[in-house]
Image (cartoon, rainbow, N blue to C red; front, side, top):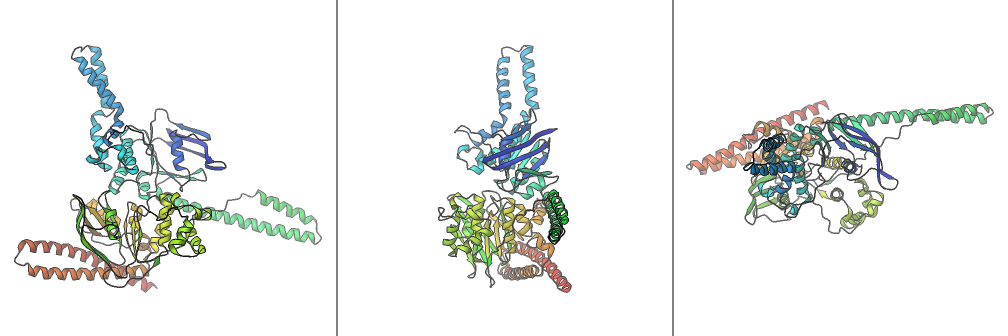
Length: 633
């Protein structure tokens, strides 16, 4: 059964610049479809057309009769005194009406209990049961727990929430409503990792139809089974998830390149033949002109493939500053309190040169606060931060703010970087700010464009430590790939906060998890970390037994430069652990008569030994790979 049919629709907001230009597709009942395309391709416009919020200029849109459709970004207006719980309970409006009717009939039956009244009562009870009335509290708690809506938040006035929080509440409300077609526009933008994973599982069990716009590649891989990409206002179709789409799109592009090159070679061959015939005709054989004209007409009739276009890749990289020394960066007994609330306490961690660390945790646990303390934007309540004298930090905050938003992009670079106009233009062009874009005011940029501009400026600074707070937020898929290219080329040290599992999996070789006021240090990549959580749910503090390389791509290619870097990092970490274990031996002798203190030290020693053995195993693997590569060369 067809739930949605779109036939040849067009929509333009500026004359002669169509956003949608003859778009056609059909969605079958129960399908899970990803709507892909670069920013500005018309994805959100399409959603608003499907809900009837805006009308297409031409074409037809049909939604199956009796099918209810819900869009996450359409947040209804509620009374000022509505709490979050009141908003969520609007999802049960139909059930609430039945409850009221049942109460009225119950009161009436005290005086009149004839068969007609009893039959009406039984019919309402049956309707209430079939509509899930007896399960609504369970459903409400399930959705709230999954999306991280706490009891305190339920009692908060809805009007006081941030835009992101309102979107999350509206997502919960939509999931509770008996909706047949879900339109999800960036549903994971305001969710932490746990909530995102819960949403994935929910959608896999959902019986209705799902259309989603998302830049979360893990989410798309897990949820969708079909992709529709909007290109130049029309649809390209891919029968698979995001990974299939990415591979198939590249295949199609290469095939188009081959077809284009084949056509151009044929046209070139015919043109040369026609030119020769014209030349010979001028030398005394006029009949040859006729043959040349015939060839030229044949050229006009040949099928022409448009020259394939591809997204330009990032043409710049971070200016790196080499690091020398033993201690790179560490914190000891770091604590942060806000009045009577302790966000985190007594955190002691060490960052080694060459580490790529992902800092994970639920929303509100203090990740961004921790980063701001490291950047000395705010002060800790207690604790100590050590930074090596040769440390140079490049910082990309979650919310990018410019001191002079009234300046143009070009002026911003000229003032901030003290460079020539040509160098500023070249740097902006490398980050896809071209032509008239460079004269835009910074205040008029979107969140993603501001992040891109800040990255553009960071690239010119000599740094050896990158600190990134949600670096892929607000960015489309292509922009995320630009950042990933830059980070992949960076040879220094990186600490980043992210909910983008693709980004985490690609780069992290250590995982820091912030929970219950502390940070657990896990040595390994995201996949092994996830597997550990799955296998050790009853032992969340167990350390991994294997460390992964910095990126999946580099792990597979196994370049000598990368392996040498990883070997050096492992050796430094092993040396540090050896010193720590020796120190524990000294401490054990000092407290040999104190059983409790001795037991605590021995527990620490056991954890360090596990880390040491895991790291030693990794060192052996890297050393073996490096030796094999050197022998091959």
